[in-house]
Image 1 (tube, rainbow, N blue to C red):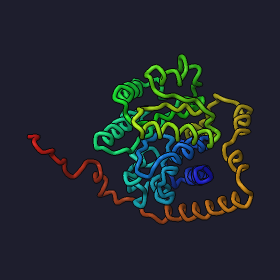
Image 2: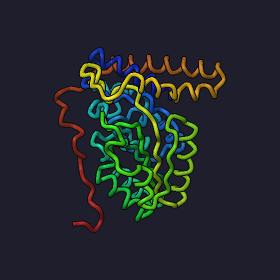
Image 3: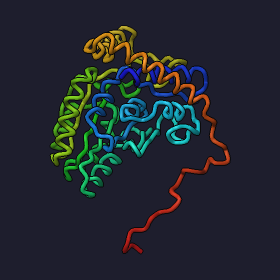
Image 4: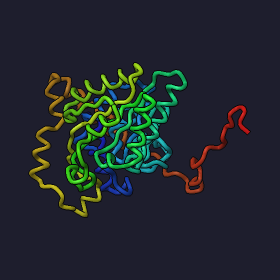
Length: 311
């Protein structure tokens, strides 16, 4: 969680200085969800992410230096600077990619989980999405097929109370957990600001999926401390009050978890993270920009293998 928090804060500094063009969607405040869920996964399990996906990618094990270089559009990035903030991927770690289209990663994760089961593997998939995605039809299609075919997937809804600036209660009829239950999925709602609560629920959901008991929906109640997107630093939309943000910050997941650790351990972790991210920033700054002549590379597979018996 400390890594994710400080990574985002350092990334915001690079946005302000112009190193990261276009801005980012900060994950600050929601760290317990990525950390808790990914701690329940194996290295070879799959995840799909969102436009606010840095935390998921880091929690799954991606190199912070290469991730920061990706945000800066540099060749040293996870995807040679082509993916940027909203499309980072690392197939070697099971990170099938973030997706800027709201809800679009749900069928990708469901397909990956189904394919793993067809191959005789016990790998599972986890799909992260926000409360703003629960009204997207493609999410319900993924719910339906996952439940119908008992696909080993965990759907994780990060309910931070806002779809950009629209409050959840103004856009979502019924309950989010109720939507999962309607498809017959094992469903839990928990405090998404408590990493231990998230880990406990995620571990049970992963065990169920790996054991052949089908999909689960976890609704993690959380709050985004920072802007929806860094454009808010100049646009300054008024959809919530300072008092509301400060009340949510009283439930900050980092000091809550830090209080469970010996002071010396916490201080050692903090120091390690600072050194790691100082090196990551330097790596990103030193990494070159892609050569414009290679702009059309990595858009398509070099060849499409044809299955036996297919003309």
